[in-house]
Image (cartoon, rainbow, N blue to C red):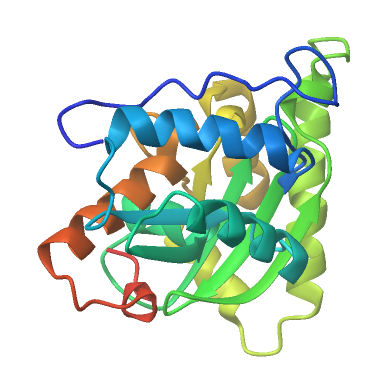
Length: 237
């Protein structure tokens, strides 16, 4: 929130265990608890009168229609005037991407998901997702974590390269991929990715909050220009 920073998303409790979060692997697994959590955050952030409020929802790139529909239904219950929906990769690009257009690779290494997305002029051209993240890798020998995470990322990029007929991946790598998520806080991961790809990498000041800060940046633009639509955020900043 402008001027207030990041609100603490205190986990809800529900049928999935004491303090289990109601969102797992990028999907809503406990709608009731998720609704209560969003309601508490809205009470703090928006107050009782939400008629003029706008919410930006970012979701995993490969989130299915069922997940997006469930998320929209929960947000509709908050009584806001408008909801903008965009992928986490587009949010990350808005905050940490280059100003010029063209192909851009976004690598998001989160707690429970690892995603690689190819954006071309801001639109998703291809994407890969691994349902594993830092929480899973933390169970490994710490010395092995960087190699396993980097191998997961490189395998997804290689797969995308094989299906790229227009050279977009090559152009994105020359530009340098955007690294986001908690995995991007680890120099032993980011340095190895840069070395294996033979290119520089782009990091925000705090990679773990790149997506939410990008969503906040888009929200600020919408509040300044109320007629702007989500499609107008196709270009990275």
